[in-house]
Length: 133
Image (tube, rainbow, N blue to C red; front, side, top):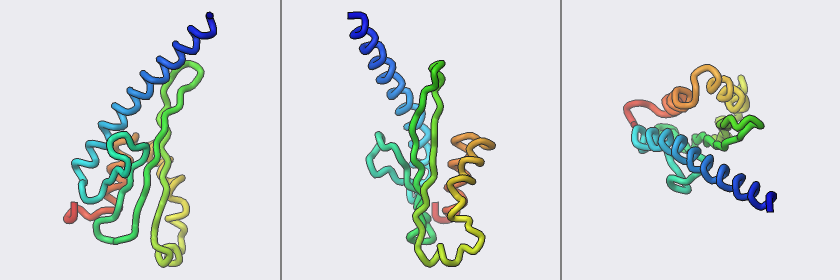
């Protein structure tokens, strides 16, 4: 019986954390979707676990931000964001410095320095020209 109670508590915690994740990330994503409607896309709607950022001036250039929430042993919530790139093959050939290849690691560094919202804002601005927003 005690094991069943623990499972119910774990489920309740999981659901409440999922709701918090949806609210926090949902508000951030909604903000960027409203601010950059031509560039920011949510393929799965508001419950999406990723956000696509498409260049408004260079067709075929796309960045995908994937997020998930992890919880450590002490119950601390840790958001994890990853960057995936989708660029034309020709651009990869021209990228002699490997900027596209190192973009995911650079994004992680940017997150550590700027935080989630500022890092996403910076990323969107770097891919999209302001006159097209």
